[in-house]
Amino acid sequence: MTRTSIRWFHLCAALILAGMVFCALDATAQDKDKKVEKDKKADDKDKKVDAKDKKDDAKDKKDAVKDKKDEKDKKEEKKKEEFKPDPAQIELKGHKGWIYAVAFGEDGKTIVSTSRDGTAKVWDLGSKDKEKDKEVEKDVKVRDYIIRVWDIKAGKENPPLKGHTDWLEALAIDKDGKTLLSAGQDQTVKSWALPGGKAENSIQAHTKSVMAVAVSRDGGAVATAGADGSVKLWDKAGKEVAVFKIENTVKSVDPKTKKETVAKEPGREFTCIAFSPDGKRLAAGNIDGFIKIYDVDKKAEIQELKAHEGVRALTYSADGSRLATGGFDGTVKIWDAASGKDTRTIKVNRGSVLAIAFSPNGGQIAAGGIDGYSEPLIKVYSVDGTKK
Image (cartoon, helix red, strand yellow):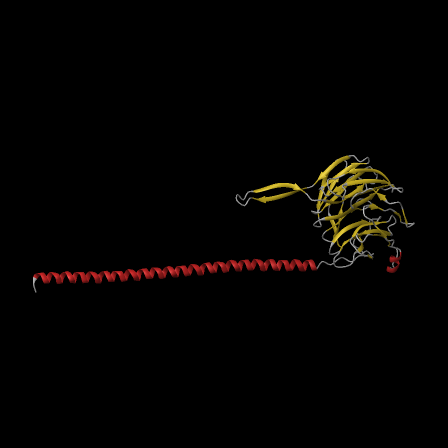
């Protein structure tokens, strides 16, 4: 073998060896890449599993929250279903619609009621015979925008009072029975001389419907409550002497800064008002559930109570020692007028209490309203809770 041949042989051998090394390195690199890719796929799979687990955990938490909410809703629904009206001393049946107003006669033996069915009824509480109660009812149809006045004892209708241009919301009569006040959705309050029915005065009382009107026992002051969220005091001549408004405190949180701000906003409509028998206090209730007590002489708020999820009726007892309220929760609450302490709650119906009245001696209270579970009833209860 020549020297040149030997050199070519060594060169070819070197090239073959280098190729083998390169192939080995390339195979190793490919194995490494495959391992990395396999590991990556495994990691991706693990991440997907983790993500699925988190998603499942979130779903489980969401389901748990939903289950708790459903359980809470069921408990609340059950609690609501368990509302059982308290037994009344007397139940008066006859109206076919919501009961809007009730009032005792001076002797405490009769009740007058009005209803959405378009009738006013007089009930004899002295009769134990249910059928006899029906016989003494005096039904009268109530016409739109017209006030009709009757002599109950004689059963005689006096001349109708005309003047309002929209639905009537409230009536009030002074102690002597000589002046009638009317209020309605035409935003006015009108006064009428009785028994003739002569129109004496008319005032534009509120910027929205006038929901309630009351006159002090001495006839020297008149109060009105409006859907505009205000209560107003007027003198006998119809001059405005004070305005009270309700404000609610509203808290809000900025989602970006998390800063909490507190603001005031007007409260919703007042629905009912009543003077205390001595005329020194005025109580007013609104549909947010607030009961405001005002000092008439000082023209200032002196007390605030909260009840019913919305107040629709209130009245003082004849001696002024008690205040009764009724509302959306179907109950009547009796309060100590001086301290504002809630002394008794009466479950009346499963709807709303729209009308309440104390008997002249303060021993009984009559209530009526809406009950979607039974026919409309006027129920009479003992104030102290006794059955007699």
